[in-house]
Amino acid sequence: MLGLMKGLGYTLKNLTREKVTYDYPNEPLPLPDRFRGIQKFYPDLCIVCNQCVNVCPTDCITLTGKKNPDPEAKVKKVIDTYNINFEICILCDLCTEVCPTEAIIMTNNFELAEYSRDKLFKDIEWLDQNDQNVRQVNKP
Image 1 (cartoon, one colour):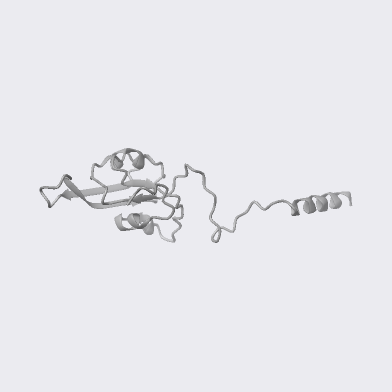
Image 2: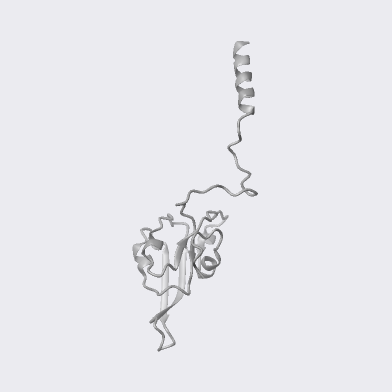
């Protein structure tokens, strides 16, 4: 009987505590300032230097460029394709650190749940539209 009273007392004491759970889909989770989420890519800022591809420890980034059709332009190459395979990406933030034009930035978006592994392969259009919770507001 004493054990039952102890258990009931513990339960009643914890009923008045503040809740620590979140109503996730309806209420955003509080994320730390240095949270590393999915990348956002600005194709108009990319100079096709391949530094992001070279620094990637998992080789999940593919980048191709072609010669600029305008011979008088300052940029020699223009971007053709940019893909990230999020199946093997570890969100290490190295690609954003080495980018000289800040064409790649990390966002606070972290939802990549898919039913198929093929859908984790994201292309340039998807990465350009990934603008949920962009941390840096000084981008175009």
